Image 1 (cartoon, rainbow, N blue to C red):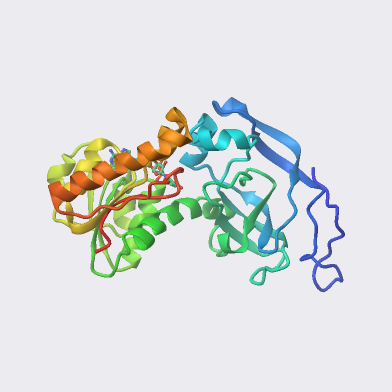
Image 2 (tube, protein in one colour):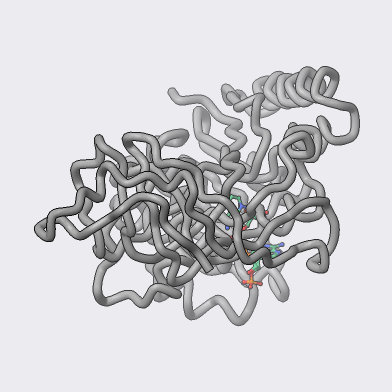
Length: 323
Ligand SMILES: NC(=O)c1ccc[n+]([C@@H]2O[C@H](COP(=O)([O-])OP(=O)(O)OC[C@H]3O[C@@H](n4cnc5c(N)ncnc54)[C@H](OP(=O)(O)O)[C@@H]3O)[C@@H](O)[C@H]2O)c1
């Protein structure tokens, strides 16, 4: 159930969607008021929809997807940051239709089909009939994709994009190793790398082999039956580790060319901050990263860099020089 306070009409019919106020609008949403198992999620029939800021877009949800980050946040990961902000609405990804937009939005019109993802730290997520995203967090949904398909893409693909393009700055002709290519982030990473003209080796489970090869991987190593370390061939300009187990970090570093990037999605800052509080947790996480940087600089001759405020799943912990 929802209602609109303002009088909205479609452009061309005399009403102004840009000036629409959502101040007294409510909608159905899945709310998290305490951390725990799936049972703590609560469907509430009328949750307030905040007023739109100039660059924001109100999206009527047709499909949203569940990311590992949503599950971890629900269970209390990042509680040192998110507990004071409860109740939260989880969910990063959405596919739906533009229902209204703020005064500065110029690229979208009401009724267009869009998909996109919120920033990892957004506290009003997409598990609602109406979600608010900024204009630059959305793009038009290709007609060839269903809403369900589209909603499964953005957060995972943006995570891969950020690692490969912003951190490793991959270029044509480079070699990449994706540890865990069968998952959502890994599969996106393979496709983005291949599209950028790179060659990709990957590890995945038996049921994912055909899929990763179809996505363009040159070599797929089945981690469930093969000795990954023996099976992987050559040296790589960048390694994206979507799994984050200690053996993968060792493999990733050992197969890296000098000056390459080892990137893992398993940031420690949030969990350390949860255990020790923000004041101690963040400096501790920074110290752990620095220690690894020094260790790998001496043991493998590579420069390492990391994002110390790696508080959520979205950011990528990078260990590797930009040189
Ligand atoms: N999804 C996101 O938007 C997102 C964003 C930021 C960070 N992350 C983080 O990135 C990680 C991966 O997320 P995801 O969404 O890609 O997960 P996912 O879709 O559940 O995929 C994980 C995959 O890991 C594979 N796997 C498990 N153990 C492995 C091993 N030892 N070696 C190689 N592959 C292994 C499995 O592949 P097979 O099925 O082939 O066995 C599984 O499909 C998670 O830790 C998550 O928290 C995810």
